[in-house]
Image 1 (cartoon, helix red, strand yellow):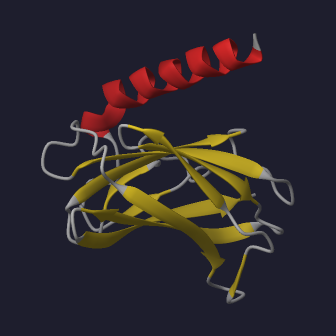
Image 2 (cartoon, one colour):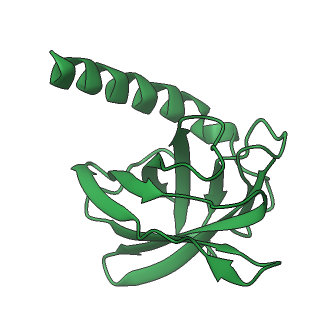
Amino acid sequence: MKRILLTIATSTLMIAALSLSSGCGDGDGDGNGSGSGSGSENANAAHSADESFWVMYTPDPDPIPGAENFSLTVMVHDGADKETMLASSSIEVDALMPAMNHGMATTPTVTAMGTGMFTVQNMNFPMGGAWEIYVDVTNEGTEERAKFDVVLE
């Protein structure tokens, strides 16, 4: 029963994210979207550095809690049309608090769910402030980073 509910929730999340994908991000295509907690309605999507990829994420729980583990659902799309999900892509995820020059005390675990969708477990921001989430995408020999600014209150 739990697996069915998880599948339904994941499918619902994917449909909702896809319906928003054409208008997400901060609009400047620099891979520097503003993350959860910033007040921007399109904060969880951004182009990668050279715009080859359009990356979206949804945190669970939302908003991201302080000093507690949370997870992300990450979706990787073609950067040109922002709709075609890249099934052959892979990702690595990390985060940094630039003001304190430290990362998380945990190591994220990425699980591919297929069709360009991933779950990222074991994320934890140990303190409030400005954080950057890095999603490093690899697809067919192209490697680029999408960066998301997150302000944890």
